[in-house]
Image (cartoon, rainbow, N blue to C red; front, side, top):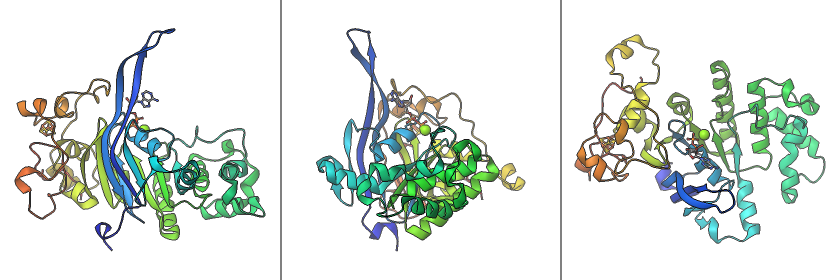
Length: 346
Ligand SMILES: Nc1ncnc2c1ncn2[C@@H]1O[C@H](COP(=O)(O)OP(=O)(O)O)[C@@H](O)[C@H]1O
Ligand code: SF4
Ligand SMILES: [Mg+2]
């Protein structure tokens, strides 16, 4: 079944998160705002993986934290199975939150070093006793260790006795404890050695099949997300600039930012490396407290023209292609969106 024929499990519309900038110690006054997330919309369908990619500082973690209620939106809505979370009672919201769990980026700092893995994985049962196993919680924890490929006998060990990859498995087991439907994974393998990354991604894919999970997977590296995503959203400075199926994004990118990110992905085939044009992204992401006018990417875009400073490009099908069908008709927030050949890896 294609994603569009089903109802989304999660739908985000016009999501905004601004962090106020204040001055003064005794009398604080707001002098501006960090516009970390500035109008983001997307849908997540049952059983699929949505990848969110973009450089550091683009607002990816803030989106993730908004999804799991670690941050509250400044504006916009989050709907779970059609229901706006803002309209739910505390109790109903708690039940929804149980179904949306997060796996964090850094397995070295996200696990409490003074807790045993048994206590870490079982902690969600303390927070949600209403769904904790009735009898032996430790039996359920052993089961979870087994599910993520760790020896259940390790239940009394501490995080420092595990490798990075094993720690991320512990983080995943914790995320699974309450049988969620959705896992939001914020750079789940970024802190791991390349050799271990594939193992953890494989584990996540197996778990997805086994438990019918929907994933939102965040990464700054496009190559990681490619292996696991059905659809991809590319984020730049608080906004999604291009979105489509993995084939649309990787083989037919139309936004200059996506094209630049893809051209930086190493390719195994020297023939392809030779053929393709390399686009070097110069400079850093501008401050989200003072984003450029018009198109936010214009200060780093090789195609920028006068119109780009004046007019913000909407995330929509590129103008000349409206009404058409094909691999380049997916939404792209660029006035001059066009496919660029030889940037995608094979
Ligand atoms: N609690 C906060 N207070 C102020 N600024 C924040 C806070 N959290 C994130 N930011 C800022 O928001 C922007 C986006 O951050 P983040 O969501 O972590 O991006 P990413 O995960 O893509 O690297 C950054 O400029 C960051 O400094
Ligand atoms: S709108 Fe202009 S600045 Fe923005 S990505 Fe397109 S060409 Fe570049
Ligand atoms: Mg982040």
